[in-house]
Length: 430
Ligand SMILES: Cc1cc2nc3c(=O)[nH]c(=O)nc-3n(C[C@H](O)[C@H](O)[C@H](O)COP(=O)(O)OP(=O)(O)OC[C@H]3O[C@@H](n4cnc5c(N)ncnc54)[C@H](O)[C@@H]3O)c2cc1C
Image (cartoon, helix red, strand yellow):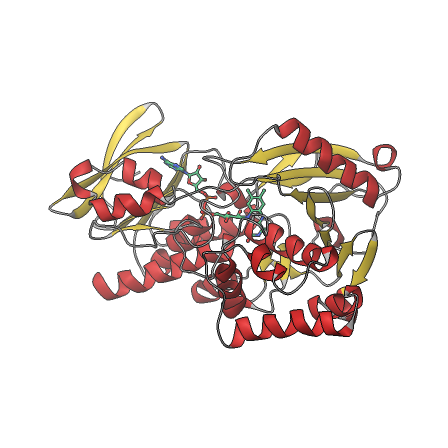
């Protein structure tokens, strides 16, 4: 590690790795520092007896912002598009090859009039006037239908994509995501997500920078409202490293805590107070037999489960030979302040027994985690992000707490990196 770099990136999540690669590709010597032992944050993989389990996200939007970053820096993303996708709704499977949301709504509606009323409302909201954020998506939809299966379709999409229940999502946010990203298709990274972050770290090193793990930022140094560097703890010693650009991937609230108070104005503090992390239940299980012919299943009209991915079905190298790896997502009843996690997981297990007969006999549960608080589903609920700039010149935030409206999860994290790279090019040209 040197004392001076062109830029320092704190944290190696999706946003941190993407901006480090973009800055390195533009010729800057970058220090990418990560407090954990591995790269990728909430979008990485850890080995559990040969199964590459996700530390959080695993589905990347194909052609989306992460792949745009890969293209910009000239590395292959390794994303294998998910081909076999279906929705499980109250016990029935709808293969997406035969049509997605529109087809399912028509199938489950009690009459043609009901289907047309819902589809017409969706079309108007997307093409003419989106609903207000003052009501929830569920309240908005309830104006057009009380049909539980139609609600189940949207609960599945919203809770798996946006990590909150449809009764918690500000209605307008759903349409912002659709405006920027529909139709959304996903894929998994061959060999596990960590492979992509390692490729980005290699770019940093090839450009003369350094990548260090086990290094924790303790303070961000500022003079005259301009960032000057970072104080960090590495290998049991304190270091001060200088750089004219600092990008934080810790989340906007954690970043602000490392900055001397006088440089964070009241308006920004007010924005930070709106940050509300979301919670996800996450479970991995394995099975020697393939339990379904799909690599991704959206799940609706269940107790808690909202999606099941089978990365081993499409991506190589994520499970031992002869075994399959499954990733299950679930939304707690209250995904903003989850309560009684044990009971929440008990409900999730009941769903799995409904979806797969003899689940307990045929599978082995590998991990069970409820992500929340400082290691959340999303850093903040859609509609409450403060953006990528801060009140301090050349101090930026990247990550899912810093993307623009309509860009969520890994796509928001990568989008924030693309926006920071544009700002750096504009305000700090080489
Ligand atoms: C269970 C789960 C499933 C998900 N599924 C999907 C999905 O399938 N698709 C999708 O797009 N999104 C998904 N998401 C959301 C997605 O994982 C996140 O939006 C994305 O990973 C956030 O990346 P980030 O850039 O904000 O960085 P983070 O992952 O938050 O990483 C920040 C990094 O900074 C490090 N750090 C923090 N403080 C310091 C410090 N002081 N010094 C040094 N380093 C520090 C942390 O250790 C961490 O590695 C999921 C999330 C979870 C939890």
